[in-house]
Image 1 (cartoon, rainbow, N blue to C red):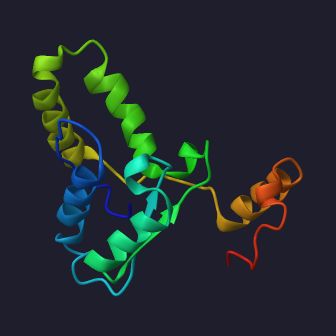
Image 2 (tube, rainbow, N blue to C red; image 1 turned 135 degrees about the vertical axis):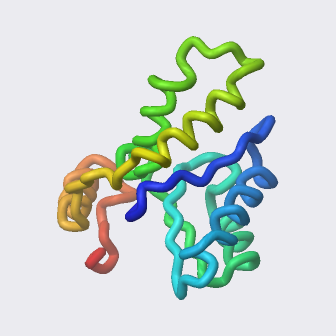
Length: 149
C-alpha cells in the first residue's frame, strides 16, 4: 500500500488454496516476511471469510492478521481500486485465452509507474461512517466496541 507495488498471480479458480498461495507469495516477500505485524484487509469472499480463515492465516503466519471489511465496503480496500483500474485497462474486451498474459503484463507495466493512492479517508471518517451505519444496521449499532484509534 505504501509502495504502490502489486503482487499477483493467476489462478484457474477462486478458493482457499489459491487464496493461501497468494498469501504465501505476499508473506514471503519483504517487507512482509520480516514484519512484526501484517494486517491484511479482505472482503467477504468465501475463501477468506469468518473465523476459519483467520485461524488458517494465523497458523501459517502468526504475524498476520486478517481484517474483514464490512459487506459492501469495497471502497475501503485499496486492492479494489486497483481491480477497478485493471477492469477498465486490461480486462474489458479481452479474449479469455489471452487474459492471463494481459493481466500479468498489466501488473508489470503498472508497477513501473504506480504511486501510492492518495487515500484521504481516515479512521475518524470510518468511525463516523460506522456510527451513522449503526442507526440503520443493528450489527453496527454498538460500533465501535472500543475506538478504532
